[in-house]
Image 1 (cartoon, rainbow, N blue to C red):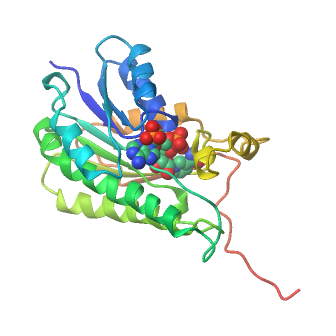
Image 2: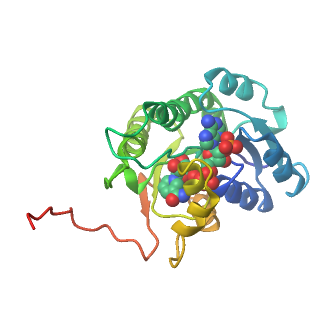
Length: 253
Ligand SMILES: NC(=O)c1ccc[n+]([C@@H]2O[C@H](COP(=O)([O-])OP(=O)(O)OC[C@H]3O[C@@H](n4cnc5c(N)ncnc54)[C@H](OP(=O)(O)O)[C@@H]3O)[C@@H](O)[C@H]2O)c1
């Protein structure tokens, strides 16, 4: 039987890269996507031979998604699991100081990029048959607001609802759909959010034990290899040091 195939958006860093490495090591083929070509090549060169197909693709550019999917070689078809992971937060300023251009990038990437990728992949996932799955990366920010979370949190709330809508529309097909919603995790996420400030990234994770990309990879493995009659609708994951606290009370003094 042919090796199963996973397509991962955002495989150049963090959750996506760790997941690509785990699946490639364990007998899957991986379509690894992202904008940074050199990182995709590096991933290919450091994984077992023939396991990685690097696909340079910009989630904000619908045409690049269409072209990328069209050019997937036969040995990487059909895709059995779509890991819709690529995304970002930009900036932490509250409304109304947050720049509109950052909001656009988040909406284009986290919402439109995910929707477009899903639309292009559904025919192939249907071909894969029983055991196929779509795993969408939301965030606890989509459920619990925090100051400066605004459009990022809202985009991730969209991801959760879209996952449920997808599951409903795909009823009767073999495709499972999961909304995976992690909390604080160490990756390049804060570096991107702070416009490339690597020190801010390190500082953010000082003195805490966050989720690691390898932890996420283990969970994606669990979800993608569940028996085909099971569907995890949503999964919220926090590190132990993070708590879903009670809503803030503003006192007069
Ligand atoms: N880290 C956390 O605390 C946390 C918590 C909850 C949810 N999340 C979510 O988890 C997902 C993965 O984030 P991460 O923590 O692993 O962060 P990361 O290390 O910054 O990785 C983000 C990935 O997304 C890709 N990406 C961003 N914009 C893209 C675009 N326009 N086109 C194609 N790819 C794009 C990046 O690839 P290129 O730059 O090479 O294109 C990169 O591979 C994101 O959706 C994030 O919102 C993260």
